[in-house]
Length: 425
Image 1 (tube, rainbow, N blue to C red):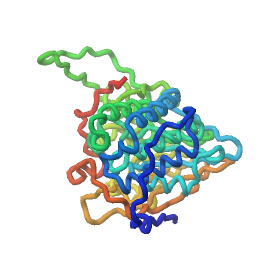
Image 2 (image 1 turned 90 degrees about the vertical axis):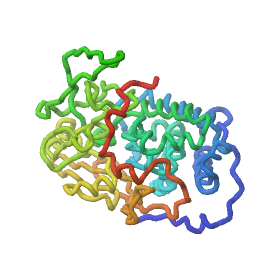
Image 3 (image 1 turned 90 degrees about the horizontal axis):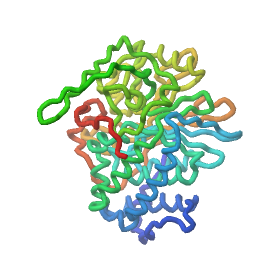
């Protein structure tokens, strides 16, 4: 088990401030520039008050990097085919939730993205942790540098609703003040551009939450106008017996450019992919606990693998807090669980944020490990698990959300507060 000891470095006198980050001359990012960005972000997290970040990381630079990455992400399909070249391995990463120092360690421990090593990230880069902005910027920089070796998927926290509740919106506003709204809008647009899933080497499906239902075809319904011109929502009640497993073709055709994936209506596939959870109960049913997405059993995992000629599903979405409430499934102590083991293959949940959540109301912490998975040639279907402990001690930081009153997991959603599925563009 790997661990990075950072105590001695944290006690050293503060070194000189790094220079202001500037876009590299010539316009193209380099490995040295990205490495320098990581070092600068690490320094700022340890020695600079949050609202002083713009003195080193100007808002114009942040927006340029986000827009550059969003332009690349926008061109990728909902379902990205990751086809490693001979000799390439693939590293799969789960939730990281703004835990910058653990992400920096993970990249070093696994080996940085390169022509020999592809990375697939399953989403949830922001919220709860104190350095969501820095974490996401670092990963976006890697995407811009190596667009064909780094793949960033959307998590349920890459949304307007979650970031307003779990801290990222307030984090951006605190760090960038007057420029905060403009910077935040750029991030929201980038969230909409993130793809939903990958298929690695033709045999491994990865997504944040998991599988999804087939497209729902509903009769046209005119909404009745209420008082003052407001429209009453149409009743799109879904009969659980009518839910069928979706196809990869339907996933490719879904509309992902929504601020908050809808929990009702016809465009349900994005919400399913980002919010669904596995179960030990057979079948496919609405996820009543979350109010969005699905629950699916081992029989559905078998059907999905067999239909699509796959061997593994690697999803994320559930940390130790969520699993603490689910006694039917294994805990997240090691950073991963094997939830379904069926004839055609396995379903794995992967969580990459150790000692999560960073801010916890109870004195007793979960002290979970994080993990990442390496898929090696030639078959890519035999996962190699790497668990790691959190970088300690973490630099002192203030939370950007009320972690005492907010639910430990995402179960208690205020669905009415979620965006109706509109785009920011």
